[in-house]
Length: 249
Length: 249
Image 1 (cartoon, one colour):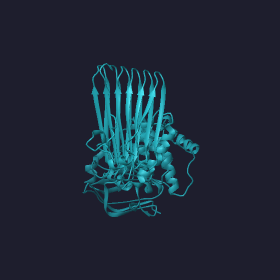
Image 2 (image 1 turned 90 degrees about the vertical axis):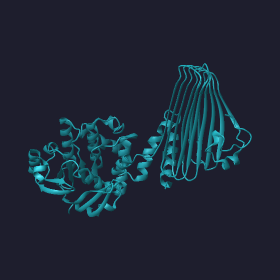
Image 3 (image 1 turned 90 degrees about the horizontal axis):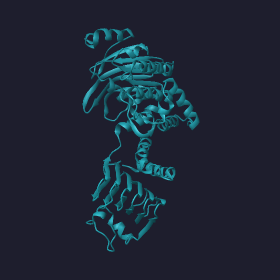
Image 4 (image 1 turned 45 degrees about the vertical axis):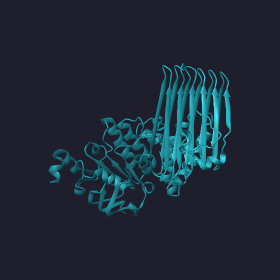
């Protein structure tokens, strides 16, 4: 069964059409990369799929794991197995990562009719996933993203993904703001958390470099609110060599 | 400030935002006296969690080198007023940490008049107000530093959060300084919950009410930091915040 089926999706931001008939299908076990120039609608796609207020769907449909995704509230999308990795993770003073993530994970489990994690179980899980991303557990006891460097924020996003264990991860420019080592750590994190026959990833990126670590099965070029070209991993290299303009034209 | 025998009107600055009808049923308000002896340490917690209207007027005298730590949780009364007259002798220290949490048509107010009469005394007021529906929350805070009260260190941090645009927050800081070498810092802000933060929390699976409650819990936390019974106050506040986010419009 198809995991995500986007059909002719149209969306406005502040009454301005940004997505203009985007179609894409993702099957379990696949990693897709969406690349495209600035302003193509890449982040809008991520936010629209995540259900962010202000991103208004004006046409088309999105089916996720057999449900109409667009009918669901953001937290219901998460409980259904969708994870949105933010390009700019938000700082929330006074709320600790551990507290927030445990409540979030348990809210998701409740939504699926599963037993909540006990404090001990949760800490063990958090420690394991933090270790995967080479992140000190002490950082997760701090307020959400407050005082984190750009790279730490992105690693913390991946730790959250590991804990929440989604079916589909939409990762919006996870590679931006990362140095070479952090890029490798995040790439390996994505592979170990999401490379599975029953999971899928949609990577939104400007650059080829993350794709050296997370090998996509499919690469799509987004321009002007539509997917204008699709291919295999070689397409990413072609874009890197020739630029968007040449490939899209 | 002393509460006169005749029922005040809204022309009286200290009662400008009061619910005068409710106050009329409580008038006259007896003045309670607290005296902290020289060098002594004392604490008081006031928790208003009943729906009945209440007004208290407390005069607090903090002796030389003495400390007084007062925490207020106003979470329930249809009308709740706490008026404090505080007099600080040399080297005395006074802390007020207060949270006012209101919904419906409730009117909550805290009025403080802190007099630094001797040198080198310190005072801090941290007031956090959360308002839903048509509630009104007011903090009027006056700090007077008398001639000769050199080396005074006075601080006010006043913040209000409106959950609905129909709620009203009033804040008025007032400083009157007749001494030298005085530190008097005050900050005052009225705002709404950060929409980006809320979406971030919801995208991780927290239902909207839970996400709001978590952010509000963080917002009021500072009022109870270091309180002798911080945990009990926070727990009681949390219950009320749950009601606020659910009864909000």
